[in-house]
Length: 371
Image (tube, rainbow, N blue to C red; front, top):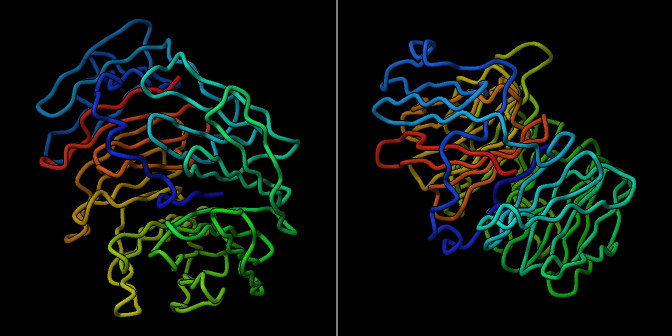
């Protein structure tokens, strides 16, 4: 499943200390990149590079990025990382191994690994030190992550697999595989509204405004829900391919990522929607695998991840790809900070990567592992 980036926010004070940026040490791969392979890094206009592990530490430098490879970076989880959320100095990552990790980003040695029930975890969010997790069996958990021993409590349940969760300043929204969307009061974590639409298999939810949530589905529809009434306010025309991720900005712009169809990569696109015109504005073409995450980096850029093992930076106005790098394990989820300069990526091999983007030069600056 895919997670929405609107839930992935943190206060900008989280990154006032840049000491966590360690270069390119966190990218693990099945093949190395040595100094003799430097010619494989294209020129700065393309800004494309690949990184991996080596027997030791090696450094490659061009005009824009320094790559440091180190095979000592461990995996945060032993299975697919399903979602990431950020809050102040904490990163929380959920995993299909039925557990979640809490990492202090100022001190990687300060981390906790918590087993939660007997079902894979699909998505999470953190609000005021309260973690909410939705699970494959439909359960919705909450727990306090400020203490040393999180005590998960079931606050509700969907009939089938809970796929996504997002929260605005006023309410929380969860969605499931049975087509059901629930709205929750954030202070009491009590369901206030719920609605079910036939074949509306929820794939992502993101916050559009305080009372509006954007939701994608396997029925190929993008819907805007009003949390006050629990009804669909806008339903866009069906797309050709299933949309699997979404992100919102400025209260009216939505970007969705699609899966394509089978081995066909034609449908693996990002799409920009404008609620003021109630239509799709443009497509961003370049990924060769299902898109697993997308996020706005301010109003000028987008960042996306895909099963083609790439992370890409896009210009919103021209819809052109400004840069990319290859991870050698498929990204499964993506989170960005509210200053739009830092991002975190969960991988299918259990790793979590962190990196920075230079918005002035529209380029990736550095990436490292969260271990």
